[in-house]
Length: 352
Image 1 (cartoon, rainbow, N blue to C red):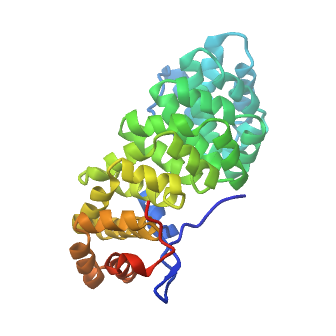
Image 2 (cartoon, helix red, strand yellow; image 1 turned 60 degrees about the vertical axis):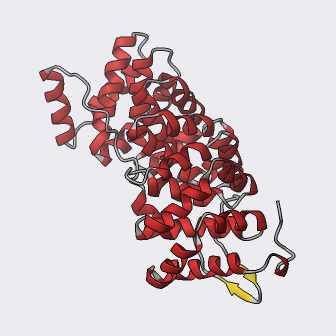
């Protein structure tokens, strides 16, 4: 599996800069709220249906109800299918034991078929049920093996707003199995995720960003993301320092800049001034991520160093080297040394 831990480790002017990780698990995980059970609100149910579901959720004897609902998924009646999918979704939402029972009762394959439906409401119910079932680690492998990835990608492209958001979350859950990352990328998930990142509502943006962060640990998915135009929305979100998306988009960018296409796209989209501003006025975590991205950008490109220096990066970097965290100080010092070296001293750097 071609996944990467993104680092900025290199030797320059006889000095070795090591352990300059852009992404450490503790800080990146706190920036992303994992997609837990769906947040799409309760579907309308009559009082008797609600009571039946409540009793089933509160009781250990829900097997018979689950079996009936799985049979309903295979009904030729679309209304019965909707009702069954809705109730399975509710049963699986907050009770982990039910997720296992529902999967063992054979619900996964008919739910996947429902996701392929041309009826958007039925599709949405199926996507949401699969999302809730995927919260159980024991179910992830079966969901992927049963062929859920391509229907989820289709729902991500053409579904309702809720279906798209929940499909993004479901794909995130499946991508937590390493071998699924490549399969998801090759099934066409990256472009619609980038579209959701750029054009979705705030929940859609967060879900897409989290899924892309997971998927882009695989190198070929980084290239797909850049080709899909991800740098434009990432730079725009990072420029909005008052938003809740700055840290999330910065972490995704920090994964991407290990590939040359991403570095070029970042510069083309006006990312350097945004990164320098974050180094100057961002939070402690934002400053550390921004300086790490700039360090990757400048490592072997004289032209990018010149652009960063001309943007006025050195004064805020000096301040960061004095007041930042220990890792931020190390990264700031490394970047300052790069920016201050004469052009002719490092023949390995590329003058693009």
